[in-house]
Length: 340
Image 1 (spheres, one colour):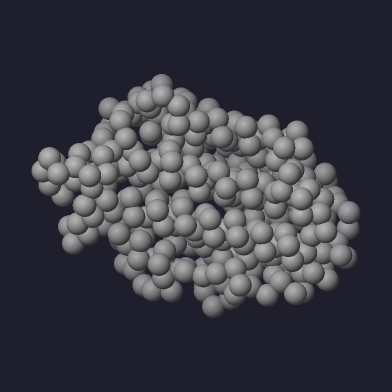
Image 2: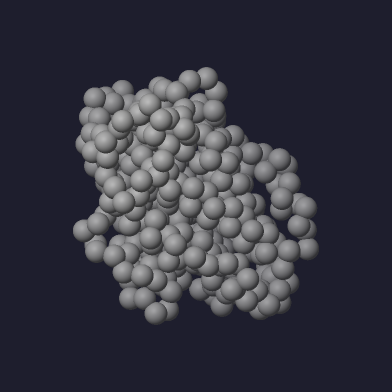
């Protein structure tokens, strides 16, 4: 697989010949001709959901943070440090490792928008850190200093490094899609839960509101890669070999193990509402949701153990939640549900 040409006047690729990857695009965004309508619908939705960190009032969190228990402060700082790493990684990954191989213009659009949103999330975390934490440098250096966090980050980054080194195969591209689905749909969702747990007890409500905005974006990011996987599986079933599916399940198993270990590590059994069993059940529940969304079988068969999280991840004027509702409920505009 070679990176696509950004200017390719010799191409005569028709709109119906477009591919998620492996196509021959001209480099011109002819957006009045769309093959993957779901991608263009997501583009509209992402534009409608535009927000900025300054919209969130963090003044109450300054007071609340000082009153957190040592265990809550430790977990808050570690959870925030993990999110900082993942959004930093994802911003660069999308631009440098993923989009150069994607040959559908409408999908290129939403990946560029996603990269912008990941960068916006990094700014959001900076606002949170600067507003409330007395140990700003420690939080930003934690990815180096904390052995457990570094081990987790090393594994996440390793998957993406396979695209950055050498010439990836078509199956490497598919694996990267699954890796992104895991990042967006398990690691991020798990990381957000701790902030909602504090909000449930009336603490750090500004942080929870910031996370709500971020998670609304992550819902669309998750849909991007789930749709890319499903379209590729339909158009290129030959790539979905038994060996690849085995590798995918192993990726999920590894991600689940890492995230469960991380969740237990940062909470240490001292965070009300997040027992070790709840953490384990919730991560496995998320993994099954992601697997079934791309036509694979459940692996863990766990029920949602903390449905109260749904109330904190949704906006007050909306009737469903991020975890169970369709993403279109969170757009400021309106889309047909069948578009996805």
